Length: 484
Image (cartoon, rainbow, N blue to C red):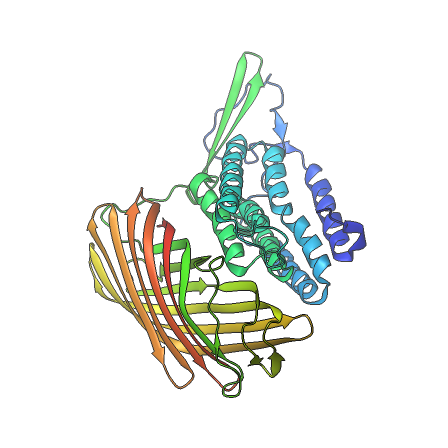
C-alpha cells in the first residue's frame, strides 16, 4: 500500500521531525573516546589525530527529560489522531510507523559504527520476518475485512515492535520509549483499520520481542575502547567506568522456578457451547457456535509475571486473552437480536468478541526451590461484543463488566529442565460466572528460554439486561517462555 504522507498533516509533521533530527545528529563530530580520564594507552606526541566518528552519547541513555517530553507528545498526538482520523488515514499512518523504529535502529547502527549491533539487528530482523510470514502461510487466517487470508500474525506490528524493542534493549529507553509509542500506534491502527484481530496484533508484538530477547545484547557501558593509527602502527585507548551497569545478567543455577516470565501462547480454541440472548429476556435464543472453517479457531494469549523484589513472596501478573470470530452465513430461522428482526433465509455477517484483561497480585504461600503454591486475586475486565449485519439491517450489543477474580497457582520443577504449571481462577455472582483452568508442561531450553504445551478450559457466563452469553471453550496451545 502506498503511503500518502502529503495528504496527511500528522504524517508530514512526523517526517519533518525525523529529517530534522537526522540533520542535527549529523552535525556531531567528536572522537570515539570522549573521556580523557581513567587508565588508557594513548598515541605518542607525533601521532595524528584519532579516527573520528559520531559519538553515541545522543543515542545511549535512560528515560531523561527530553525522552519523556517526546514520549508524552507522541502519546497525546497519536492517541488523538487515532480517535479522530478516518480509518483509511489511520491505516496509512500505520504503514509509516511500522517502518520508523526499524529505520531508526538501522541508521543509528551505521552512524555510530556499532558493527556488533548491526549484526544483531540483522538476526533480529531475519528471525522476525521469516517467523511472521511463515506463520501467515501456515495459519491461513482470514482478515477482518476479508481482503486476504494472511491475518495471523500482524506483520506491521511485528516489524514496528522489532525495531522499537531493539532500540530499547540495545541502547536504552532514551529513544526506545518514543519508538515504543510508534509501535503501539501501529498495532492499534491495524485493529481499527479492520486488517487484524487483537490476537494477531499481540502475536506480532510477541514475535518482535522474542526475536530481540533471542539475539540482542545491551551495549556494556562499563568499557569503551578506541583504535587509532600512529606513525608506527596503531594506538588503543581504554576507558573504564565501574559505576555503569553491566550488559550481562547473572543466573542463579539453584533457582529452578522463574521469578520473572513472559509467556506467548498460540493454539486452537474449540467452542463447544455458545448461547446468546439479546436483550435478556426478549431476544431469540441463538446457538452462536461457529462452522468448521472457524472452529477450532486460531487464537493467542500473552501474560507477564514478576516478583516485586528479590526473594520476595509478593508478585504481580498481567494477562490478555483475546477471542474474536467473524463469519458469513444464512439465517435458518427467524430471529430477534438486539431489537432487530432477521428473517429466515437472509444472509448476514456475524462478529463475536470475548476479550478478557487481568491485572493481579499473588502471594507465595509455599516457596521452595522445586515447587511453589501461590494464592492470588485479579481485577478482570470482561469485554463482550456481538454483532449481526444483513443487507438491510444491522444490530450490535456491547457489554463490559469489571469483577475481581480469585485464583490459585501451583508450579513445580520435578526435573532440572522440566517445569509444570497449573492454575485455577473463578468468580461467581448474579451477572458473571467464570471457571478458568490452565495447565502447562514446559521444557527449559536454557537459562532464558522454555517451550511448553498447554491446555486451557474456559467456562464464561455473562447475564445482564442487555445480554446473556454462556460460552464454553477448550484450547490447546504451544507456548514460548522468556524467563529470568
